[in-house]
Length: 216
Image (cartoon, rainbow, N blue to C red):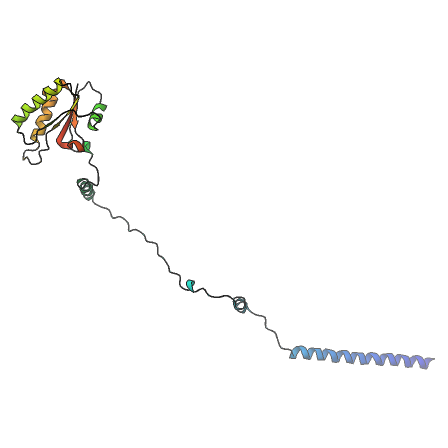
């Protein structure tokens, strides 16, 4: 009995020894295959980009995109005030800017103290229809005095409300607008009892060379 038991243990032990050898041999083979197998390199970012974009085609129109620079206006230089005045005067003379007659030194207005102040504004703006006109161009002071006297008296008798007297500006006179000044003096003193107001006419009606006269 003891002999059989011993033989069985020897058989089992021998079988496990062979198994260990087989396991070691298999491990060696696997290890050698993993060493000899080619190493696969993982792609980097640049390779992935080119691989992704390989089907993309270039658009020729976008090869060169022009660059547009924004135009900036140069800063305005400080100008002398006299130059600005001369420019404004030139624009007025050439008709680019309308002339505001009340702002000029030649503008004339007079109103009776009992009249409303807005009468002057209405008269200058042509709100009253001109019913008669006296033109004193080329007339000397002595002749003008007679003509103005007859014209005023006839206008009052005729019941005229508004008339016009053209006296000129006296630009060619070495002594200035003599006739204009004397007509203004007559109207504001000698004939004031007949007159409500008088004022420089509109530009289209003689402007600084004429007067609207409004009777009471």
